[in-house]
Image 1: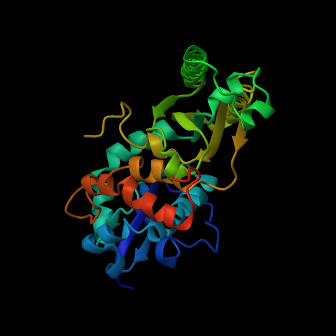
Image 2 (image 1 turned 30 degrees about the horizontal axis):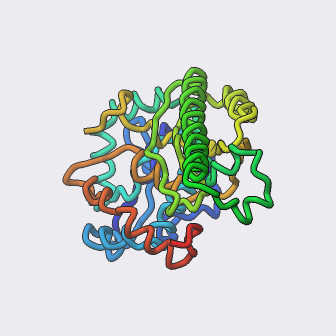
Length: 264
Length: 60
C-alpha cells in the first residue's frame, strides 16, 4: 500500500496484541514497525490529506483536527493499556517505512532515555477554575430576591460603597483562588515525579464555566496514581467559588520532551 | 468546591497535549509541519468554528 506513514508513538517491544478493531488516523489500523530495540507504531495515511500543504489547511479545520486528534489519542491510549508509549506530536508524518527506521536509529539513545524516565508512569491533568459570578457567592448576605432586582443605591456614597464591596469580594476570591492553586500545585508536585504547567485554557474554546487559573500536568507512577487521585479528591474542603477538574490517566504527552522542559 | 472527573475527553485537553506535548521530530524525513504553523492554529480559527456550532455561553 502506498501513502505516507503517520507515527503515533515509539515503544519498547511488547508482547500483548493491540485491540483488533483499533483504527488510526484515516481509518487504517496501526501496526508495529520494529527497528533495533525499539518499535514505532505507524499507520498509512493518504498523501492528499497529509502532504505539507494539505496538512496546513486541514489543521485549521476543526472537524478534521478533532477527528485526527481523537484517532491519535485512541491509538496512544490503546498502547498505554499494554506498555508505556512515548507519544509523538500530532501529525508526525514520514514518506515511507525506511524514513521511520532511519528516525528510530538516529534518535535511539534519546528515546531509550526518555522511555526509561517514563516507564510505568502516567500523566494526570488537574485544572482549577474560579467560578463565574464570584461576587454573588462571596456575599451571602445578599438574598436571591435581591439578586433579581439589585437595590438601587440611594446616594452616590451608597453606590460607591456597594461597588467597593463588590470589588473587594471579587479580589478576595481571586487571591484565594491563586493561593489555593499555588498550594495545590505544590502539594501535587510533591507527590509527582515531574510536573508541567500548560497555558490556562480559553473558556470560549473549552466551553467550561469560570476562569481557568491552573492547567497542570503531573507525571505519576501507576501504582501511586490511586493515592494521587485521592489527594486531588480531598481538595473538597470549603473553598467556595473554586472548582477542580481531574483528567487522566493520559500517556505522558506533557513529559515526552527533554526533562528540563526546554525544547528549542 | 466540586471535583469533576470527566469521562469524555474535552478537545482542548487533547490539544494541550497533542499540539504542545509529544516528542517533536524534525528533519528532512518528516513532513511534520513546523511549530510555527502549529502556533498559527490560533484559537481564533478554532473559536470561530466552535461558535458556529455551539452558541457561546457568554452570549457575545
